[in-house]
Length: 58
Image (tube, rainbow, N blue to C red; front, side, top):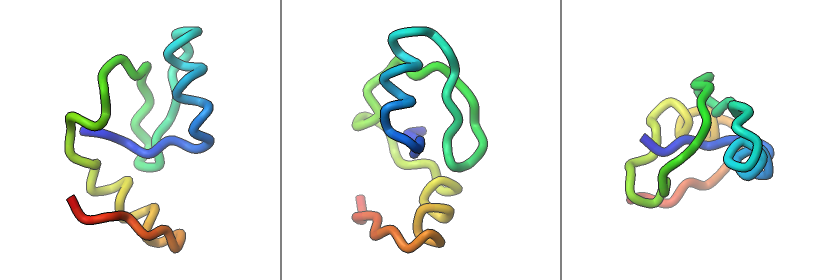
């Protein structure tokens, strides 16, 4: 699954330093793969939409 992380710079920091980041859904991990290759996490999508974000359909 691909996840949404705020701020986006936390993903870059996690990749460089190995310090885990936390997604909107609560998942904590160190990203290592291209998120464009995976579907968006349903929970992250729901949280983002509840914040008023427009998430494009896949």
